[in-house]
Length: 224
Image (cartoon, rainbow, N blue to C red; front, side):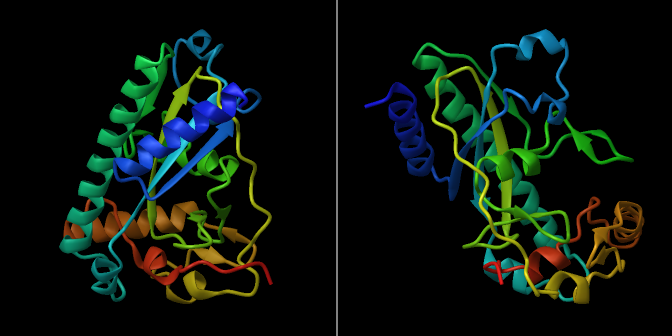
């Protein structure tokens, strides 16, 4: 068996066994613009990024009506913590095999205005074949929709890479119809409007710049 495929199967099995809902590998050799780690030369040998997804509770999401709540906020944070733990467990497995890894925190922002992090989990998940970029800018997985949180692991381990899936939101308008900020449109996503509403929710509901309304609405759509 090809070494890259052998490694892929080994690490995927390990990740799923530890609780991951989704697993994919992206070739990032020519996509380093999605990564913000310095010094940049440390990334020279890191040509693969593993994307791990953890499904959110569908029942917790049902408690969201037209705004976030503290139950969802806490659930969101705990899922992020579990993802960070998964990244360390998988990364240590990679390290035991003689390779290097960099775990990218599931939810640590470098710029609160642009909402940028050490790496774009959405871009990595997309290139790892775990979903397409929906109208809400979230990754839409065919099975779970947008009801997934992601973490990324950069590595120099030889791994067979997945490819983006050729699907889209089609005629679905679910996220557009429910967005409390009116930030989601047929032809784009208004980050400023979304961020303004998140700050309003945080000020009035103390929900830590978390919404979840569009996440609840998105169950995934096959290309139409």
